[in-house]
Amino acid sequence: MLTWLNRNSWEFPPLHQALRDPNGLLAAGGDLSAERLYRAYRHGCFPWFDEGQPVLWWSPDPRTVLFPDELHVSRSLAKVLRQERYRVTFDHCFEAVIGACAAPRAYASGTWITPPMQAAYIDLHHRGLAHSVEVWQGDELVGGLYGLAIGQLYFGESMFSRADDASKVGFVTLVERLKTWGFVLIDCQMPTRHLQSLGARSIPREEFASYLARHLDASTTADWLA
Image (cartoon, rainbow, N blue to C red):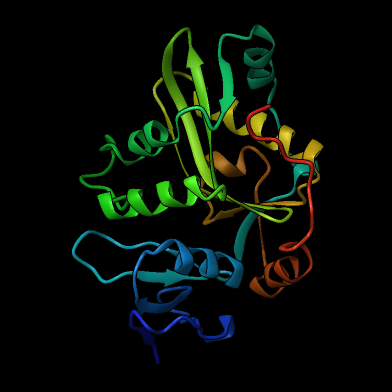
């Protein structure tokens, strides 16, 4: 049975209670306050819903993740990185990145990153929890991604690209930086060919939960504006 949250319900149900069909649907309702979102990621779930739907909370099994040591860079992408055709920054324009991620895509008629969703993550950014990666070609923002950093885990949310390989360059740069900072896992949520080509793979939800238990409160050397 699906758990319904109200604005006064802060506790999410145990992850094992998530539905099998659709895979990972854990709860519905509640709101997109920064406090609830923070609790959701620490619990192992994330929001994903279409405009007009209640807030839906998901914890799929298996979970798609990327371990920094397993990052795969193809020869062609390595060549792009060596050419330094793009410049990568962190936390320089979070709102522009999430706005670009929310923009209509050629393969979709709408977006799940609604204005309230954007406002919620911008709030998390102001609290030092959500971070962006920007990819520049000259002075033009051509790619990027955003997500949350809690302890030694990075929870990726969305990315965009307006130039060849721009989002891949941003992602690879992020993973390499996270590795030097002591992060142990990047949560990719759901599998895509794009992420799998970079080394992402699926692990059982129970194993993902064990990483949460061990690393959410661990320290790193992260300096996002360095």
